[in-house]
Image (cartoon, rainbow, N blue to C red; front, side, top):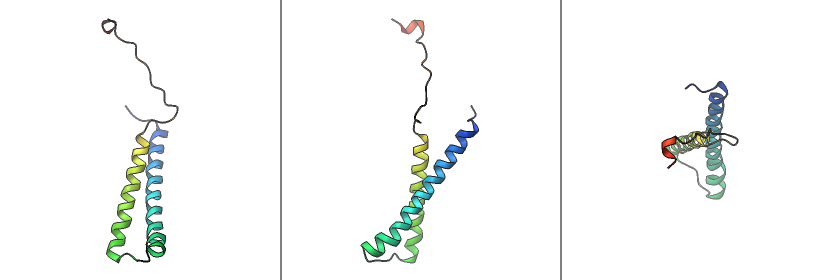
Length: 86
């Protein structure tokens, strides 16, 4: 069964928002937490791993949140079959 066009767009937006969220966390982590809270800087080769890890986290979070039941979704209630009414 094919998804309506608005569903595809909603999924793409959710994944994109998740990616932006992950990268925002990553930027905040490197610029605020490491520099000002921990008084450290990441090694250049660790910065890429740090950013990619947070990007994957954001993509996963956005995908998972989009897979959840949406508020207002209605499911059809099927009638039980005559044989199951014993």
